[in-house]
Picture 1 (cartoon, rainbow, N blue to C red):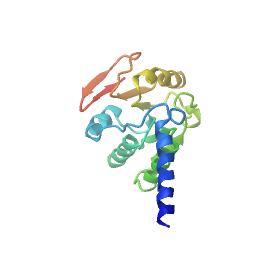
Picture 2 (picture 1 turned 180 degrees about the vertical axis):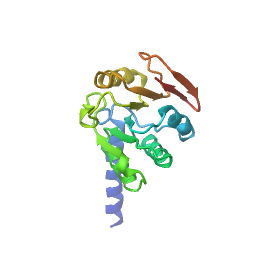
Picture 3 (picture 1 turned 30 degrees about the horizontal axis):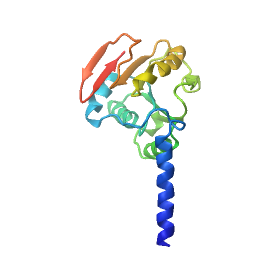
Picture 4 (picture 1 turned 120 degrees about the vertical axis):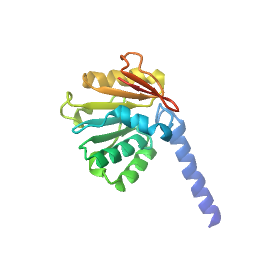
Amino acid sequence: MFLFIICGFAICLFVIVILFAFPQFSPIPYFPSNKKDMPLILKALNLQDDQTIIDLGAGDGIVVFEGALLALQKGLNTKFIALEINPILVFILHIHKLFHPNKKNIKIVMGDMFTYRFSSLISNRYSLTTFYLYISPWLIEKALKNVSSQFPKATYVSYFYPIKKLKEKKKVKGVHFVYSY
Protein backbone atom coordinates (compact mmCIF):
# COMPACT_ATOMS: atom_id res chain seq x y z
CA MET A 1 0.00 0.00 0.00
CA PHE A 2 2.80 2.41 0.93
CA LEU A 3 4.55 1.71 -2.40
CA PHE A 4 1.26 2.44 -4.23
CA ILE A 5 0.97 5.84 -2.49
CA ILE A 6 4.59 6.72 -3.28
CA CYS A 7 4.14 5.74 -6.94
CA GLY A 8 0.92 7.78 -7.18
CA PHE A 9 2.63 10.78 -5.64
CA ALA A 10 5.59 10.43 -8.02
CA ILE A 11 3.29 10.25 -11.05
CA CYS A 12 1.36 13.35 -9.91
CA LEU A 13 4.61 15.23 -9.31
CA PHE A 14 5.89 14.20 -12.74
CA VAL A 15 2.71 15.45 -14.46
CA ILE A 16 2.91 18.78 -12.62
CA VAL A 17 6.57 19.22 -13.60
CA ILE A 18 5.70 18.46 -17.24
CA LEU A 19 2.88 21.03 -17.22
CA PHE A 20 5.16 23.73 -15.80
CA ALA A 21 8.37 22.90 -17.65
CA PHE A 22 7.46 22.42 -21.28
CA PRO A 23 6.63 25.35 -23.57
CA GLN A 24 3.96 23.29 -25.36
CA PHE A 25 1.80 23.77 -22.26
CA SER A 26 2.86 27.34 -21.56
CA PRO A 27 5.51 29.35 -23.43
CA ILE A 28 5.92 31.59 -20.39
CA PRO A 29 7.33 30.13 -17.18
CA TYR A 30 5.38 30.66 -13.97
CA PHE A 31 6.82 33.48 -11.88
CA PRO A 32 4.29 35.15 -9.57
CA SER A 33 4.24 38.92 -9.13
CA ASN A 34 6.13 39.89 -5.99
CA LYS A 35 3.68 40.44 -3.10
CA LYS A 36 5.77 43.37 -1.85
CA ASP A 37 4.95 45.22 -5.09
CA MET A 38 1.21 44.52 -4.89
CA PRO A 39 0.29 48.01 -3.57
CA LEU A 40 2.19 49.59 -6.49
CA ILE A 41 0.55 47.26 -9.01
CA LEU A 42 -2.94 47.93 -7.64
CA LYS A 43 -2.33 51.67 -7.69
CA ALA A 44 -1.13 51.46 -11.30
CA LEU A 45 -4.29 49.56 -12.28
CA ASN A 46 -6.25 52.65 -11.19
CA LEU A 47 -9.37 50.69 -10.21
CA GLN A 48 -12.63 52.38 -11.22
CA ASP A 49 -16.32 51.62 -11.54
CA ASP A 50 -17.30 49.77 -14.72
CA GLN A 51 -13.69 48.93 -15.52
CA THR A 52 -12.46 45.53 -16.69
CA ILE A 53 -9.01 44.32 -15.65
CA ILE A 54 -7.60 41.44 -17.69
CA ASP A 55 -4.55 39.64 -16.36
CA LEU A 56 -2.76 38.01 -19.29
CA GLY A 57 -1.05 34.87 -18.02
CA ALA A 58 -2.64 35.20 -14.59
CA GLY A 59 -0.62 32.40 -12.97
CA ASP A 60 -1.88 31.97 -9.41
CA GLY A 61 -4.08 35.06 -9.76
CA ILE A 62 -2.54 37.22 -7.04
CA VAL A 63 -3.21 40.43 -8.98
CA VAL A 64 -6.80 39.47 -9.84
CA PHE A 65 -7.68 38.36 -6.32
CA GLU A 66 -5.99 41.26 -4.53
CA GLY A 67 -7.51 43.72 -7.01
CA ALA A 68 -10.98 42.22 -6.63
CA LEU A 69 -10.69 42.45 -2.84
CA LEU A 70 -9.66 46.11 -3.03
CA ALA A 71 -12.49 46.89 -5.47
CA LEU A 72 -14.97 45.25 -3.10
CA GLN A 73 -13.63 47.26 -0.16
CA LYS A 74 -13.98 50.48 -2.18
CA GLY A 75 -17.49 49.56 -3.37
CA LEU A 76 -16.44 49.50 -7.04
CA ASN A 77 -18.09 47.48 -9.77
CA THR A 78 -14.80 46.42 -11.35
CA LYS A 79 -14.63 43.16 -13.33
CA PHE A 80 -11.54 40.96 -13.25
CA ILE A 81 -10.61 38.36 -15.84
CA ALA A 82 -7.76 35.91 -15.30
CA LEU A 83 -6.55 34.44 -18.60
CA GLU A 84 -4.25 31.45 -18.15
CA ILE A 85 -3.21 28.57 -20.40
CA ASN A 86 -1.72 26.18 -17.82
CA PRO A 87 -4.46 23.74 -16.68
CA ILE A 88 -2.94 23.28 -13.20
CA LEU A 89 -2.93 27.04 -12.62
CA VAL A 90 -6.46 27.34 -14.02
CA PHE A 91 -7.57 24.73 -11.50
CA ILE A 92 -5.83 26.66 -8.68
CA LEU A 93 -7.52 29.88 -9.86
CA HIS A 94 -10.95 28.23 -9.74
CA ILE A 95 -10.34 26.89 -6.22
CA HIS A 96 -9.20 30.33 -5.02
CA LYS A 97 -12.22 31.99 -6.64
CA LEU A 98 -14.61 29.69 -4.74
CA PHE A 99 -13.57 31.28 -1.45
CA HIS A 100 -13.14 34.89 -2.61
CA PRO A 101 -15.61 37.46 -1.20
CA ASN A 102 -15.89 39.21 -4.61
CA LYS A 103 -16.18 36.08 -6.75
CA LYS A 104 -19.13 37.50 -8.70
CA ASN A 105 -16.74 39.99 -10.36
CA ILE A 106 -14.02 37.44 -11.17
CA LYS A 107 -13.94 35.32 -14.31
CA ILE A 108 -11.36 32.59 -14.94
CA VAL A 109 -10.64 31.77 -18.58
CA MET A 110 -8.36 29.08 -19.97
CA GLY A 111 -6.84 30.38 -23.17
CA ASP A 112 -3.81 31.53 -25.11
CA MET A 113 -3.12 35.28 -24.78
CA PHE A 114 -1.55 35.37 -28.24
CA THR A 115 -4.68 34.18 -30.07
CA TYR A 116 -7.59 34.69 -27.67
CA ARG A 117 -10.59 36.63 -29.00
CA PHE A 118 -11.67 38.85 -26.11
CA SER A 119 -14.95 39.88 -27.72
CA SER A 120 -16.64 36.94 -25.97
CA LEU A 121 -15.65 38.47 -22.63
CA ILE A 122 -16.22 42.17 -23.25
CA SER A 123 -18.90 43.43 -25.59
CA ASN A 124 -17.73 47.04 -25.81
CA ARG A 125 -14.11 47.15 -26.90
CA TYR A 126 -14.04 50.89 -26.25
CA SER A 127 -15.02 50.56 -22.59
CA LEU A 128 -12.51 51.14 -19.81
CA THR A 129 -10.26 48.09 -20.14
CA THR A 130 -6.87 47.58 -18.52
CA PHE A 131 -4.50 44.74 -19.28
CA TYR A 132 -1.96 43.56 -16.73
CA LEU A 133 1.12 41.84 -18.12
CA TYR A 134 3.99 40.11 -16.41
CA ILE A 135 5.43 38.22 -19.30
CA SER A 136 8.83 37.79 -20.91
CA PRO A 137 10.06 40.81 -22.90
CA TRP A 138 10.44 38.72 -26.06
CA LEU A 139 6.72 37.83 -25.87
CA ILE A 140 5.24 41.17 -24.78
CA GLU A 141 5.05 42.51 -28.34
CA LYS A 142 3.31 39.34 -29.57
CA ALA A 143 0.67 39.61 -26.83
CA LEU A 144 0.29 43.34 -27.40
CA LYS A 145 -0.34 42.79 -31.11
CA ASN A 146 -3.33 40.53 -30.35
CA VAL A 147 -4.72 42.77 -27.60
CA SER A 148 -4.28 46.17 -29.28
CA SER A 149 -6.00 44.98 -32.45
CA GLN A 150 -9.09 44.20 -30.36
CA PHE A 151 -8.87 47.05 -27.83
CA PRO A 152 -7.47 50.22 -29.41
CA LYS A 153 -8.25 52.34 -26.32
CA ALA A 154 -7.00 49.94 -23.61
CA THR A 155 -4.54 50.90 -20.92
CA TYR A 156 -1.71 48.65 -19.82
CA VAL A 157 0.21 47.91 -16.67
CA SER A 158 3.38 45.88 -17.11
CA TYR A 159 5.32 44.40 -14.23
CA PHE A 160 9.11 44.04 -14.41
CA TYR A 161 9.41 44.53 -18.20
CA PRO A 162 8.68 47.71 -20.18
CA ILE A 163 6.55 47.66 -23.33
CA LYS A 164 8.86 49.33 -25.82
CA LYS A 165 6.19 50.09 -28.46
CA LEU A 166 4.01 52.11 -26.08
CA LYS A 167 4.57 55.54 -24.62
CA GLU A 168 5.17 55.18 -20.91
CA LYS A 169 2.92 57.27 -18.66
CA LYS A 170 4.52 56.28 -15.40
CA LYS A 171 7.30 54.08 -14.06
CA VAL A 172 7.43 53.23 -10.35
CA LYS A 173 10.23 51.36 -8.59
CA GLY A 174 9.36 48.74 -5.99
CA VAL A 175 11.18 45.43 -5.71
CA HIS A 176 10.75 45.55 -9.51
CA PHE A 177 9.46 48.27 -11.81
CA VAL A 178 5.75 48.79 -12.51
CA TYR A 179 5.06 50.48 -15.85
CA SER A 180 1.81 52.24 -16.80
CA TYR A 181 0.77 52.98 -20.38
